[in-house]
Amino acid sequence: MKINTFHKKYKNITPANGFMTKNSVFRKQFDRVMVPYVVCADGFTMSVQASGSHYCEPRANVERYRSFEIGFPSQKESLIMSYCEDESKPTDTVYGWVPCAVVNAVLEKHGGIDIDATLKRAEDIQKSA
Image (cartoon, rainbow, N blue to C red; front, side, top):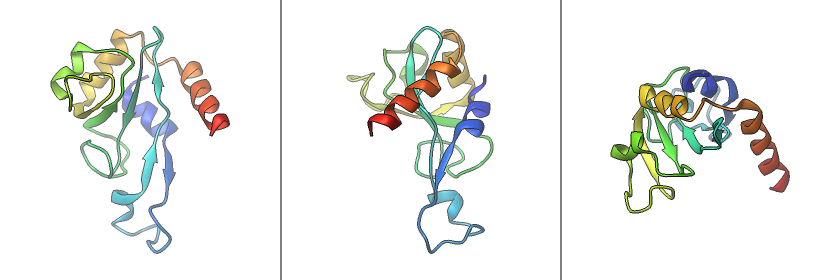
């Protein structure tokens, strides 16, 4: 599964606040959008997010993105190091504006998204919260 398909299917939107109407132009920018942490077939994990509050393009809540924010990968990943915010902590930082094609290449390198493991991880985190 490609990252835009995953993001569209599994995103969870929390409205920014009560005073903005559903059709407000600001809602696409300020709604909180999160998707589950990605778990790949080989066990590699990373957060891949996109919304008005993430380092992505476009910076809004839309159907497709040209780039994403990656965060806290489980291991150093050479394909994304040029986007790393803090190269001294490659597993404890974010990677801004990572092109969609690069995100998909990382996913492919690690065997693709393991949907069952991804959803189980999200469920386990929800239960422990």
